[in-house]
Image 1 (tube, rainbow, N blue to C red):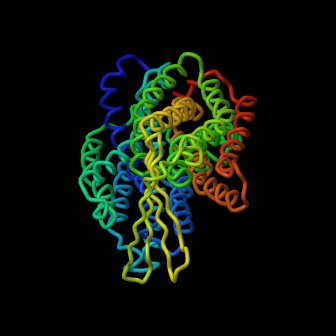
Image 2: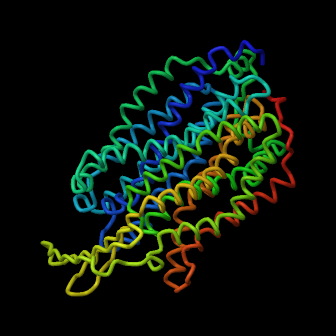
Length: 497
């Protein structure tokens, strides 16, 4: 491309990034509120089962992403990039708003989780069409030799969307009492997305079509059947499979381990106070986000392959030591309790149950609130919330930041890598499928699978049960690393652009 094609590229970047960021916000607000959602839309008599059901519903949105990639990818290669990802934006925004409107399980019974599941599936379909369109749109505006740098701005949107979801939740919590947030305030982050979607839609409405696609359409070289040409052509299918098993599969599990599993692990395994987890994760994401741009830019200079593969290798070797350090940081069995401090209060509820609350403090400033709910004088369930001290908080921020750094290495160059693998006429379809299978299925199933492994190991009495959930990302990333190192060429392919 000529240098004149960079004119207005920041407008393209900002418009594409804002819309994609909002879609990620919409998609991840569900995961960010998974702990509270599990108490609203699922039976409350078994908290562990309710939480696992919430994670399964969360994962369902990922599983259907490849179908969204096929459906919207085909439209994007036939009618254009612009109108396709405008449609995905509206679908995502509407689904998110409606999730915030669904009555609780106590009000409408099993209809509540069913409606949540349907809307979650619609969200997944929308996101399946969004990312490929945005990445392709930006790449087709970018000059040759700078695809990694410019598309890396799109790569930041997933993390920024997660960051904003956490900030909106924290802001909502700060303005409401804990009781009000638990009663109705948790719905506010879902409702807020409507305003953001409206602004983004108006911005995207005024965007022009990708110059590369517009030229292909004018010359009559667009595909009449992108699905057939993408997956029915043996030569192109080989690159689709290579993109999946040699790059996006490993990238997906590293992404979700470093951000969502880290969040879930701290809240449900380490029992750290939910607001503290949101805060420290937000800080780690804020510090780490610029590295998407750095590694995207670096991939233009030295190639995509080795940056992505090195990120996977570091993750494979480091996950177990990192998570052991995280767990040890808040392990109260290794802290000294102030014996004279514990306070116990008992509250009787209208349903006949009683809740005994014990407050403990430790010499390093850590405090613990333990609640035991009794039904018919039997210990029904126990919940623990640990408020960590400043030193432990910064230790966890650093350990999460290291994981985010791995994420930026594997994710920063991936958009340019995928775009460069496929020709213009089938690019949207061809790149979207391996991306969303790798991220949506291999990555999206990670929180549910890993949480199950941890729960099973804990029940079996393993002393290091909290590390068992890491075997899934380590094995998947390991397989991807081997395939990628053997079969992926480090030379950036630009002949299709």
